[in-house]
Length: 257
Image (cartoon, rainbow, N blue to C red; front, side, top):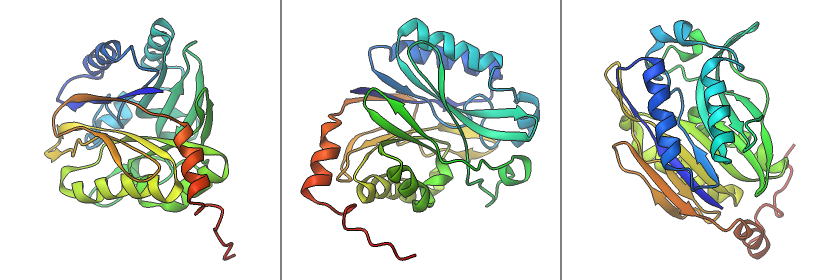
């Protein structure tokens, strides 16, 4: 499987301008089987004032643009996350779209960030762990702060996940934990982890960049720097089964009740 993580730079531009730029970047990555975008790229994670204004439903115009794009290039696309509005409130929502332009998974961020952030005040947390079927095995979906909660990733593994897709807007001030959690969540679950983080800044907060692809042993196969970029790597999904067979840590788990 050839994957590309698009590390978008956040700038003070409109949602329409951000959408046009993201679509153009997806075109540049169209030779990959699976393409990822980061968290809250249409508005900016720290632009809390834009959440209510930029919110749209799952069948809104931005989503439709990416459904059309996925169908046009015939690729799987993790659209990253946006502010979703539905009858229950506002959510931080990520979508997985297949090569026919069909939304195959909807993940609403479970763990909302409250430290020096208004996300928890403005949004409603999701309640469902999401694992999606893909041609390469089951993919577990997570968003940014979720990386700090290993139980979510174990639940995804228990539901068959062999790789994780993580959309993020992780800040630069906590770069070391970002690298640590990417590696540890992959290694402890013996699964690939592919993350897409923002670059640039919003409302005075600098993003960490350093999107990455990590193998089931916790090795970083590819990693971005601080600026906008794309990282592309081919991964062998058979490595998951071989690692789990060779070093059977998941099999050796004990139920502690």
